[in-house]
Length: 465
Image 1 (cartoon, helix red, strand yellow):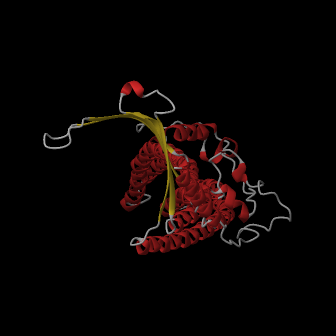
Image 2 (image 1 turned 180 degrees about the horizontal axis):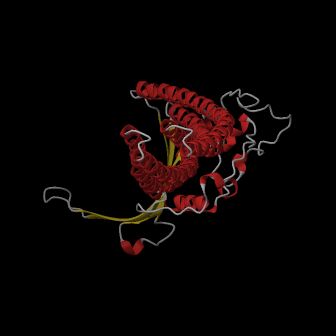
Image 3 (image 1 turned 30 degrees about the vertical axis):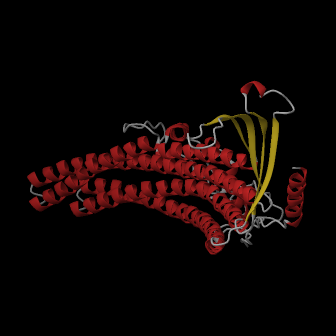
């Protein structure tokens, strides 16, 4: 037994010393990023990575308390986000399981064996009683188990980042839906105002028709304009109800009305938002971080696949008491027994299959690296698009505001001139139509302006803190 024990120890030492380690340490892919975003100015040298508005919590970024309350409700109750949280919990259990892989197994057992020979056999009744403890341990000489643990850790962290990405998208979607609702309120109010004006004009033209100053065509055209404006109202009211239902769903509630205590044009839009530097996206954007963690996991999987090509070493130790009679179990040291075994298993016929799996893991790693690069390119592009949109929409809103003011003045003049007989009904109709369209367009441009601001916040990785 002593010789067997020494042989096992020598085997352990020999294999341990010869182990060169095949685990693949993670190497972050080389990712050259520009110094600034397109559409933004080049930041000064030494600018800190936390200078971006993405570092602000949404309660500080969005000034509207009603909007922040909606976002709070969505973060707490949104079903997609709750599913992402459950994915985190599942990944946590997987990680806990993988961490136990380095520990030996331990089994307790009590066994009684009785042998009853045949009548024609040896007339000896044998009874064997044993109580033992058996422990088995796979020596992680090639890093296979460590690689498995790294992969589980990367998967766990990736699910966390995925949940953050869902939350970031959720914040932006709630803000976008809320701003769309405010825009519809403005459009509904503007349509009602223009409908009342059209009603007044219809009455005025009716009086002129009775006086023989205009033909019935004038009455019909103005009535048609009034009917066209009236048709806007149910369409806008339908959109309001649909948007309220959508926001309710995002907030994890049954469809219902959404309160708002601030008008669309009562919200200040800041255009000088600091975007920081593109390199900060590697830390701020949850989807970019998740893509990088996928690369980490792919490296770990590749290490595990390569380690499977090499021999595995399992050490098994068994000890306890054994006796033919139960009464002699605890007669020590005579009843004590022990066994130590070391087994080295080298795959032979499965080597080709294991080699193919290793090559597949290398391809998976390369795919993960490409997806990581793609996610970063996409992130930089989204920020650049949002910055350009914020700048250009601000210019559009200034022009649209001036146009509305001009057309409202023209509409007022047209009404006065028409009342004094110095303007035709066609001029009034054109003025009313142009003013309504301009007011509706201005409301939509303001919505786009606010949404571009929220999109910049999201694209920079804000909203998950």
